Image 1 (cartoon, rainbow, N blue to C red):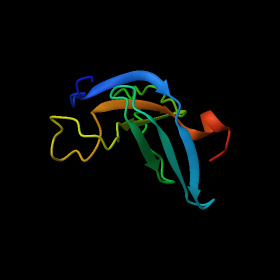
Image 2: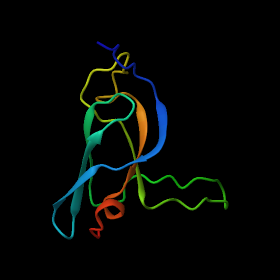
Image 3: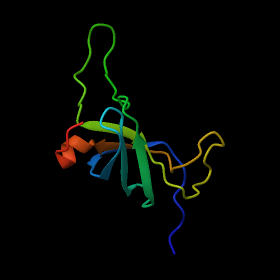
Image 4: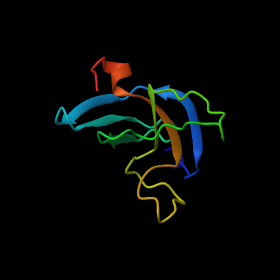
Length: 110
C-alpha cells in the first residue's frame, strides 16, 4: 500500500483532457468535466457555469500576455482526504491543473 498524498499546492504543467458533458440550456450551458488528478490519482469532477471560467491574463499594466482560451484552470477537486488540507479547502490535494476546455476536446461549440 502506498503512502497517502500530502496536501500541497503544486502546479501541474501538462494539459489534461477530461470527459466533458454539456448540461443546462443552450443560452446558459454548464460544463461538467470528469477525470483523474495526475498528482494524487483520485477521480474528480469540475463544473463550470455559462460564465467564463478563470483564465489568467498574465503580465501587468499595459503588458499583457495573450491568454490561451483553449485552457481552463482548476485546482484538484477530488473527494479523498489529503492531509494536512486547510480547513477552508473543502476538497482536493492542492494540485493546480490545466484542463483542455470542451470545445478543444469535443468540437462541440459553446
